[in-house]
Length: 202
Image 1 (spheres, one colour):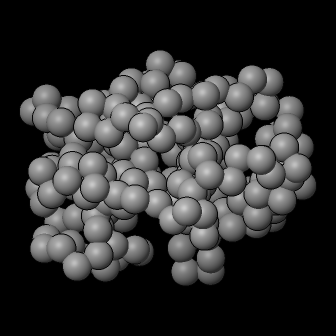
Image 2 (cartoon, helix red, strand yellow):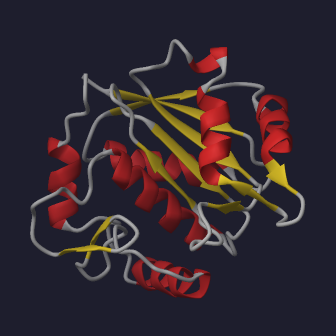
């Protein structure tokens, strides 16, 4: 049975073809069903406006996600994954002054992915970030396996795997281009196995 991911794309920057291509690669190792929610731009714009911090010119990741999660529009999607794309720059706390986004698990279902395009310098970096965050939604890397490191969450240490963590935009961009140049599948064999075996809370 395929897992369902609802896409709430509030971005005017991200080419939807990039996102759908990333999902198709995931679908090659784990069946997924994509549902694009239509006309969400103004819905997300309003929530971003309510949570935007003008002194920082950023939006707090957790505050924005909580606001989205509290809306009645998403109440009936408790089991399905929600992939939310915004253009506003995000930060997560006082020690992490920016982030591409992240995965928020829930007690039931696939949880939420919130991704910002604000620091996407090209489509190659965009694909890398989307592969990385979607990998987290499906349990990669898993707890207790080899070749992982705890660095802003659990991440893979296998070379040329999308689940490696890069701290700066420059590092992430260079790494993304390295993977693309070698024309490799985005996930290592261990992370592929994690994604295939993942079972979310029900």
